[in-house]
Length: 226
Image 1 (cartoon, rainbow, N blue to C red):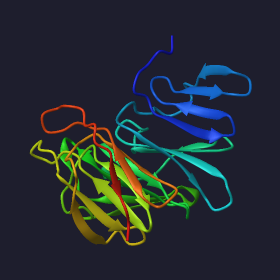
Image 2 (cartoon, rainbow, N blue to C red):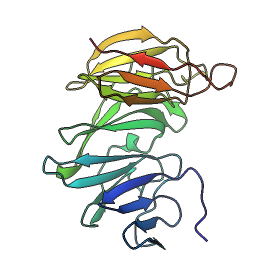
Image 3 (cartoon, helix red, strand yellow):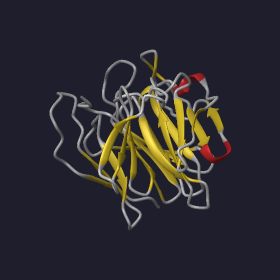
């Protein structure tokens, strides 16, 4: 009765998880129960990025971001179960985007498309203070389905698909504090739909995705911030 695919999932408290879809689900790892939660706002399926942020005192805030996440495009769920929809910029209702949580409690939402058109803006979210600010013209090349990660003071937005449907062969490096453009570097293998993850040594691992022919990419790339 609750079967679904490609739904987002977020940790909201110790051993507690929210799963998107219709209706949203609550998983309690301690009691090993799974229950529907029709009282929660709608939570998008594959369109949503989900991040867990801290407010500096280890309080969790799970953000469901993207078209279909409530009516605003941002749904915040606190560790105590309190849920609210943010008064977010219209561009929060995007698809094919990514989001990263930073150590200072901010969440950067970047990339993706609104109404099918890739957008260059980013949204800087501070869930603890209910603050969501759009920063325009952050990306030189608007793109969907990019690999996104933060490390060494840099936000990496790698690959993806541009407005013409072509794969973007570069990665943009943005300052984590200001989102100012630092550099654009070529990828070893241009790809879309890849995953980027920061490693303990400061490097960023980029893996997976598909190439211009639609074939899965087997090459792993490492980006090392200076």
